[in-house]
Image (cartoon, rainbow, N blue to C red; front, side, top):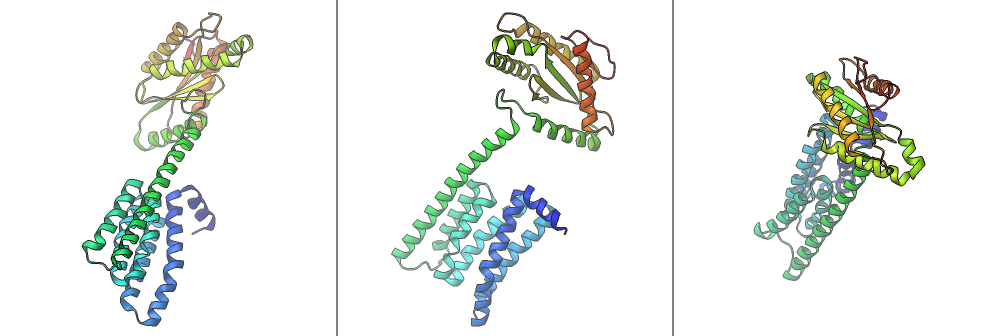
Amino acid sequence: MDMRLIKYRLRNDFQLAILTLLGTISLLGIAPFAVLRALNGQWLALGVDLVILAGILGGLAYAWRTGNTRGTSLFAAYFLGVMAVIATHVMGDAGRHWLYPTIVANFFLVDRRLALGIALIALLSLPLTGAHVGTAVEAASFFATAVVCALLSYAFAFRSAIQRSQLETLAAKDPLTGIYNRRTLIDDLERAREVFKREGRGYAVLVLDLDEFKDVNDRHGHLAGDKVLIALARLLENNIRKGDRLYRYGGEEFVIRVPATQPGRLKLLAEKLRNKVAETIAAPYGRPITISIGAATLRPEESVADWFARADTALYVAKNSGRNRYIIDPDGQPS
C-alpha cells in the first residue's frame, strides 16, 4: 500500500488509527513474553499470547482491507475481555495484571457504556469461574483497583465525548445563528450530488441574501445587524420542511438545500419565504427587511460548483432586478 495513502487513512479515520495503535502496542508488549515463554517451555501461556496476537492483528488486517472499523472495534473489545479472563486462569497473578490495559483499551474501542459493561462482566466472571486472584486481601485490592480503573476510564471517556461533541458543533455550526455553516454546506452538497448520481434523488438549492443589509449595520451598528441575522435564521428554520437544511453561507447570505423538489414546489417555497421575511422582520428604524432569492435544481453530471454558481447567478439577477424577488434558474424571470 502506498505510504501516502496509509498516512491519509490514519489521519482521517480515527478508529482505524486507534486499532493500528492497539495492534502495534500489543505486538511490542506481548511478543517478548511469548518468546520468553517459548524458551521456558510454558506452552499453554504461549498459546494464550499467540491467540491474543492473532486476534488483534487479524482484526487490524481486516479493518485495513475492508474499512469496517466499527465491526472490528466491537470484536476487539469482546475478544480482549474474554482473553483477559482466560489469561488470568492460565497465568494466575501474572495474567490478571493484563486486565488493567484491557479495561482502558476498550474505552477507546467502543461506546463507554459497553466498555464499562465488558469490564464489570470480566471482573465478575473471575470468581464465578474459579480463577485464582490471591488471598482475600489481595483479591479485594485487585477488584477495588480494577473497578476504580474502569470508573475513571468511564469518566474520561464521558468528558472526551462531551468535548468532541462541542468541537464537532463548532466545526459544523455558525456561532452567531446556530445553523449549519459554509463548510457543512459544501460537504452536504457533495453528498447530495453522490446520492443523485447513485439513486436519482433530486436536490435544489436556494441562495438567499438580505437586501440593503449594509444600511442596517451602517445606521445602527453590527449588534443590530446581528439581531436581524438571528431573527432571519429562526424564521427560515420555522418555515422549511423537515428534510430541508439551512446554512449560513457568509455575511448576510443564507442557503437552503431542498431534497427532491419539483420546480413548482420550489417556486412556492421561495415565494413563501420572501413574503414571510417581508411581513415579519424589520430593521430597528421600522423599515421592513426583504430578501432576494436565487434557486437552481441539480442537473445530471453537474459539479457542485456549477450547480451553486447557477443559483448564485440567479440571486444576482434578482438583486439587480429590483430586490425582494426570486428567480428559479433556468427560467431567468424575476418573480
